[in-house]
Length: 459
Image 1 (cartoon, rainbow, N blue to C red):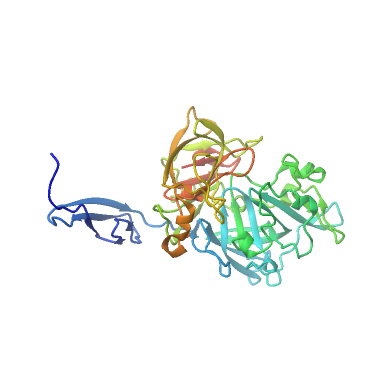
Image 2 (cartoon, rainbow, N blue to C red; image 1 turned 135 degrees about the vertical axis):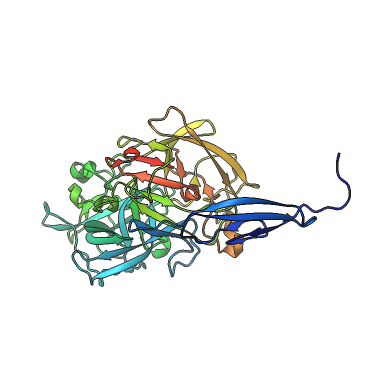
């Protein structure tokens, strides 16, 4: 039978620790041991009626192999609120020096690339080459000319010199590591035409032109592979043609201008994790759950190593092995709307990126994002090479224009942000939106781990 009369379905939320909003969103307390928080919902109609639930709160990861992660508004001077970018801090020193050093904050943590890249102060970045004069990597086959590098991303490219540095992050150190110093087009050496012509279709061009263009003081690529190029650049780099199959990456740069060049593996910009004495077989990214509508800031952990310490155990994570070579190197198989395509877990992308003609795209200036009228609850599946079937993933897309205006435009972390995948061929980019509330492992190719030999993702 239906009820009659006046009644209220509202409740009052309380919690034994932390804080809880009027909508029931719990902000957990910071704890040093595994703890339990009791949440109570009490009827406002009849205060003698209540329900309770117990929430387990884990302490933040700690140890020499743990670097803090922060998703926030971005570096000082950015000029806009950053959206879905995970940052950490990296110490960079002249090799062998303990005084010519600089701590660079707001460095993007990127599981979709490989190597440390620092935005020069000439482009508005924090890294100051005058304060920390990193020696150049040079070409022994061409008068010891300095090397330059062109690195192309899905949405643009960066250009700069290749230098050598000692790196420190958390308690991990790596000595004499090739890194890229990102330069603006006004600096010398200038951007070669064979580099700028590789700007992807719909790309923004030179993302190293300014702090605003890059959105960070640097990028630390901790993805699946040991180097950013490998054997291709050892023997074929000098004969590149700026195509997808034969990209121009490394350059010999005399004063007369830069030309494509071959480069030895040892001089290529490496995944810095591989250079650590220990905890060097991969990384774990831990970020907390982010509710619909977003959060102003969140903090998490970048943990080095897989199965090397008590804080990076795979435990119950499913392992998604991926190919280590070929056209789909580093890609798992994602099936969405009945279509199978390459998929990848990329903390350096700031949303879910995929194609679905049924989801409305936002009007300008948010035309690169989805704006469904109501939240879209979607499913896809991911499958590794050793799996017989995919494992389902559920996710939600909310209107980007509403997300960006929420909390007076101060939110920077979004678990429901997504947009069309603009590059070809089609793929599914599981960006930072996917990382919230999950422990996501990235195992480096050829490395032995407790989950087998990399490369693989696990979550």
